[in-house]
Length: 221
Length: 330
Ligand SMILES: [Fe+2]
Ligand SMILES: [Fe+2]
Ligand SMILES: [Fe+2]
Image 1 (cartoon, rainbow over the protein chains, first blue to last red):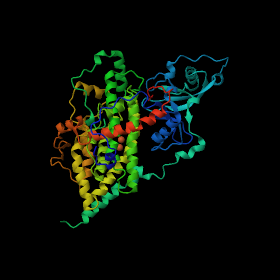
Image 2: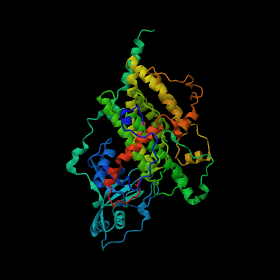
Image 3: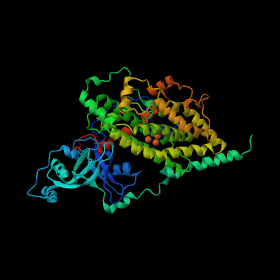
Image 4: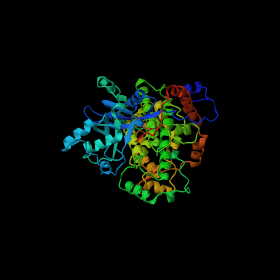
């Protein structure tokens, strides 16, 4: 195949190859969901999925895809299979209201004691994410302890149920989250020398003004 | 959509299938959209909504990935280091856009494998403008500025659509496009205000690209039941003609102000109607090219296919036997 691009010509691609076979399942791997921390001290928020063969590679892809153009100070990736979803509610509503009430744990009387009891009763930590409005991104609200994702959702209802609105909740076993290390913080500091990819770097209006000025001053032909 | 030009719209007489949908669920779905709420992947949705969105987002994704090829070929030959870096950054952005969009389409139930297969075996379309060659660096600059400008008109409109994952992807994409537009504009102005040779070079590139650009938004929409439904469902956000007019309004003055001309003697803004008038694009030629007979169709698919095939062994080597497919969530 001949191309205007000599590199393509050198590939020696056939002009009329037989149709390719369809891709096999998982040719593009599994998916992971990525979260970033926009600024030091702020909550992690969902940025989007990546396809990757492992969590480590997912982390690299997520860093490239989601932090290349939008600086952040930390990133988490989670296998999509590890995210447990609540139902979705209408905007302005709370999906917690649609869940059956959590069982009372022990003989805790005050809400605070109950929260405390719920926190220590379970076996494992779960990270809880809320979607406040449809079309926006899930945001990390905190952690609970529970014996299963379903139980974690109940605990989350007790702990975060007064927040409003909550359109949808994601529950992730904390052990399934691959998190960037605080010590590696400098991996996020790569952007300052790449001004050429910011719109700000292009002073096109100056060039246009200069051109118009020159046209005005040029002798009429 | 990214150049509705690319879309073989559903035939106007195709059944909508709405009569088979549950009327209560359909009413709730429509009420949600009418309230301005977004649809999320787990919500009930009519089959036609799902089908049209998959088609649209998938074609948008293909357009990003194929669209990076004509500009990509100029990376190695970009004049100067800074332009090389910028061109590379832009091309990388476009490929990233494809990744975001494939994932958004995937939430609707079509796997990325199927989409990539349909691209390389020619079953899916992409924006027709990328079936034309970038002969010179100036052609690449025209693409960076004006094709991206057209894409931005579409993307800004679609970002207000009803499907959550597509909106999230488009918000991210639109933010990156600000650089593309400025970079492209700057590159064109640089040549247009440069030496007589540079000037001639950019004028010739513009002349070559004007006809494809005028077809970018596709032919006038036939007002059909489909168009009406898709607009009500906020899948289609603006008519092709509306997008074209908006594009001409924003960019023709910017082209003229640096002394460039456009190869259409009938192009003018009718001050009474506020509408741009122009020579009707050659839609027969457009159809011929979109159906495979353009100057670069074969090359674009062959290059994409070679990249897929050359990377296959790496992907196979990395695949874990425990891997299990689920759709991305949002
Ligand atoms: Fe793009
Ligand atoms: Fe583009
Ligand atoms: Fe772009």
